[in-house]
Image 1 (cartoon, rainbow, N blue to C red):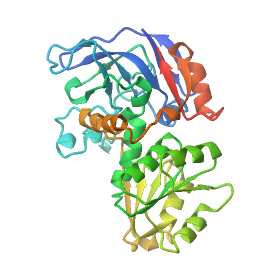
Image 2 (image 1 turned 30 degrees about the vertical axis):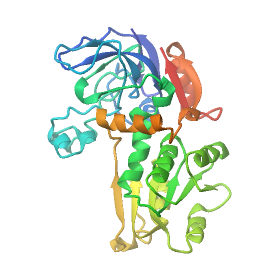
Image 3 (image 1 turned 90 degrees about the vertical axis):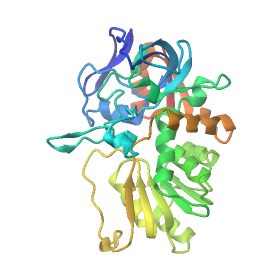
Length: 354
């Protein structure tokens, strides 16, 4: 089969690999649509280490090609998705309710992100086929009336963005600021609105993304190239600050800005993938006495999470198809990476079809 393979920092190339063997609890998916994630760009740049020769990608939509002997409740030929996070369902982390952290301990401590296996610790889905482990915990059927592109954001982007709102404990009547309106930030904006926030403030520096943020539920959009977003948010809230600030980029600047706009007792919900150490500014942190909460979240996965997200799409409450701005064949995935890594031509998400 054809697969997008990590060779070395700066090089992900299309290559050929054997079609995976199917174990008793596995399912082999024939991938019909997938996409490129910002995390894949961290891998490409060498900012997040993975093994050479690994197939990249963690957002699959596909058809069950073959089922393991012990898998029940599914059929070959069925359209499904699997989350970017594929928990086993029976680890200590899973049984504590933290399916994303389905890892364990090693000499350096807890192995964070253990539930993220596709394109991280096992071969991913930017390929013609992908092996889904623990299939009964992870496969979610796709209703016939929904297209691949309607559910393409569910495995990661939608789940991650919504989790930013959920971890922020957003309530009816809350004021929420979302810093950065890339795909995850846009889904965080949508999640905040669906969670009951009555004022959602979206911050970005690209006009097209701010326009998309309005479609996703933002009440106010701020272009940081035109105004100081911290000063403007403080003014808009009459000096009160926001109940929750969601960081969706992974930079020191956006992290600090989130902290500076929080009301006392507010929550900073961090979704960004950071490639360096973070500093907490003393003043914004109120010397540790501001009753602030800083929470981090890894994309929730598993079949029940996917079912809930698909139900949001199926209900018509959110349409994320406009986020797919470019389409490529798997044969042209190197060109797709070049486009996405350099954020050219107004790209938000790229649909990849084998």
